Each structure stands twice: as C-alpha cells, then as structure tokens.
Image (cartoon, rainbow, N blue to C red):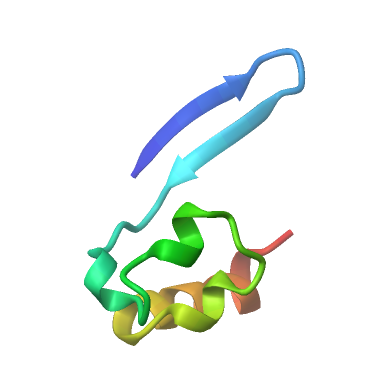
Length: 60
C-alpha cells in the first residue's frame, strides 16, 4: 500500500490500496481518466469486487 500526504494544512491523506489494468474496465479506463461520475459502472472482475468492498466496509 502506498500512502502519501497530499496536503499537510488540510491533513488529507491519499492511499493507493489496489491498482488494476485498464482492460478490467468496459471502456479501458476512459471514464476514470476523465473523472466521469459513473466510472464505477465500467468496472469488471476483481476491480469491481474491490470497489464494492470499499463501499460496504471503508467508505467514510
């Protein structure tokens, strides 16, 4: 896991917990790269499972 402090003044922390190949998205990662709000709908396989786990267990 990679953890970086993105803003000490705001005490924001960013963590990379899981990375995956763009081929695991139905659009090869286009929605994620463009910041589209419906990007989770493009996930497949383990990437989708990881995101669903985040939603149920870790999302603040």
